[in-house]
Image 1: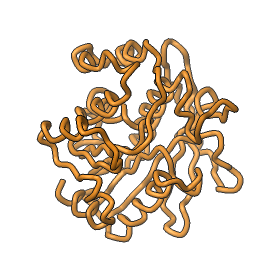
Image 2: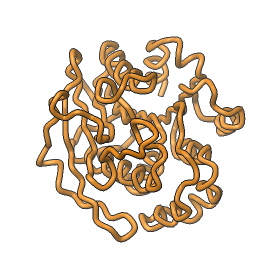
Image 3: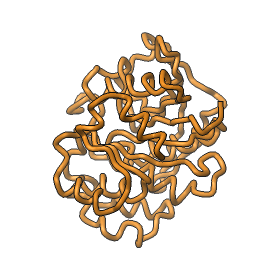
Amino acid sequence: MTNNNRILFISQEIAPYLPADPAASLGRSLPQNMQERGFEVRTFMPKFGNVNERRNQLHEVIRLSGVNIIIDDNDHPLIIKVASLQPSRIQVYFIDNDDYFQKLDSDSDAVGSNRHDNDERAIFFARGTLETAKKLRWDPKAILCSGWITALIPMYLKRMYNDDPSFKGAKMVYQVMPGKLELPVDERFLTKLKADGISSRDIKKFSALAHDTDLLHRMAIDFSHAVIFQDPDASPELVEYVKESGKPYLTAEQAQSGPDAYADFFKSL
């Protein structure tokens, strides 16, 4: 099978690794549904602290681990673990780091949306995912990002990995999911992005990001080829933003009509 049928799913939540809320259930069912429709798929998610490694049979992939990712002048080791979703046997790669993904008593939900370092967690996940996907030499034709922790991936792909042959010609699709970062976000968020080589021009219009997390969606949309709304309560302003961009999109109603809508959408790209 050629890479024309390859979709890389990058999800914030996948059941059964996290509790099966609608986002985690979709993270599990959508890759399986696409595989059943003839697509070749792989998946990534963060290795949050409440993922039970023993029960879910995670094991470290030594050849993919060992990279240090520098954020705000601090080194953070990247650890990659893998498991297989049953019964589909789809491989799930977990991005792990003790600084960012351990479970805390103060977490408001399974993904820690209220943490003070969520900006760095999103940066680490974006860079760790793209570094690992590059090492796999499994060249996807489409990449679907779902959940706020994935929102920086379209920008990093366009600005840091644009010339990498692993992602050549890949169509980036951003899926607007329910749930968001709790405010406020670190005021130095954009400064940390600039340290990674993201230009002032790219992020100038997102200067209020620390106080308006809808801007995180807009940032992802700006650097994506297409958009899927999975959140029926997405703000009308965000929906209008996508319409005005002229990019292909699925409405929440279309996305929730079933996996055939997704399959047709991916084929159209």
